[in-house]
Image 1: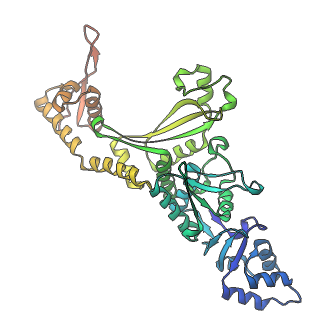
Image 2 (image 1 turned 120 degrees about the vertical axis):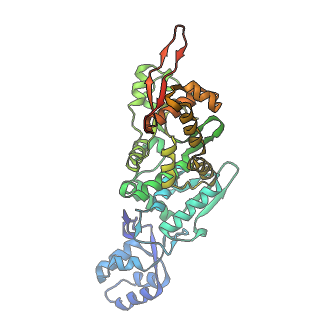
Amino acid sequence: MIIHFWELPKTRNYIILKDRFKQDILKKIKNKDSSNEIVNKLKTGKVSIQKIKILSKKKNISLSLIEQNILWIGGNNSKGLSNPKFPINLSTRNASRFIAAIINDGTLTKEGKNSRGRLMYDNFDESLRSSVLKDCLIVFGGKREEIAFRNTKKKKYLEFSSVLRDIVYLILKNKGPKCETNLPLPDFVFENKESMCGWIEQTIADEGEVKYYPDKYRRSIIWRRSLDITPLIRFRVTKDIPLRRLSKKIQNKVQNQRCNLISNEEKILRLLGIGYTLYNLGIYPTAKNKVRTRWQISITKRRNLLKLRDLIKIPSESKDRKFNLITKEYARYKEPLAIRSAVINLGKGGKPFTSLDLKKMMDYKETNTSIKWLKLFEKEGLIKKIKESSYGGGSYRKPAEYEITPNR
């Protein structure tokens, strides 16, 4: 996706041209057939996009050539954007991350003078704010001092100039909270692998959590999305209600709702070859007495997480550090090698064994842990199941029996 300067609102955005190019244009202009106003504007500085387009047509000056010689662009009384990178190419990892950040923890508000709104990114994580700021400068150009930082007890956010607001509106085509507008992902995100990876890594940084509890064998990455469903719910909701505690009728209504962001992110994960699980977590009330439902995407399993690590780097330093711990541990393969060795020892000489035998040998607290490993080794062909689990004479369950696959 490419954005040109002439696509922006033409009456409220102004440009300053590079001096040498400006002088070349002035030489072409004759006072008798060009308004003094345009001449004066060019000489003194800012000219509206509207007037530049008129001049371009009248004097047969290519808009693309003008675009290459823009020194500054912005509102008449704003900080604007110096040395803008027009035409702006959005088919990059940096652009995808920036737009994801605005949708996730930022906003393009409806409020403001003439309802044009404000463009902001709100996050207490300094490493994330720095990353978003860096992406903005790489994609759009400009200087750090042209992006305001607001620091209060309740909020720490970046506020971008009006021209960036107008550019982002061309991309999103909508304003307001994502929970209510049900924004889809911009089409450019699906144009290449880099853009899709950028979207996922920024979404994990803003909306996600890296779960790393080695003692409990819990390693996963999750993120959640919400959607306003107030018109669907006819009863008062005062607290979080899990999906299973709702009536079947309401459950069906809730599950039939489509959250565009979640659906699009599922598509990205499928295209990248990353396995995931999707859950609906039920409904909850907001401070303004609205009702929303929430979905969670969960990414687990060793090979899956290692594959994801090869694709992304999370912009949040703390979350990426956790992810690194997970994958370094997985990459070393210390535990899997130890367990594989234990399984081989259990099955020596064709001796059958069960999950209880592996639990005892590895000193696990739960049998489920050893069951998971046996299922993995069965899938890999190291072992085979020779007897299904069954109930014994009482209420207890006899575990399945396994043996080493011949020639392994």
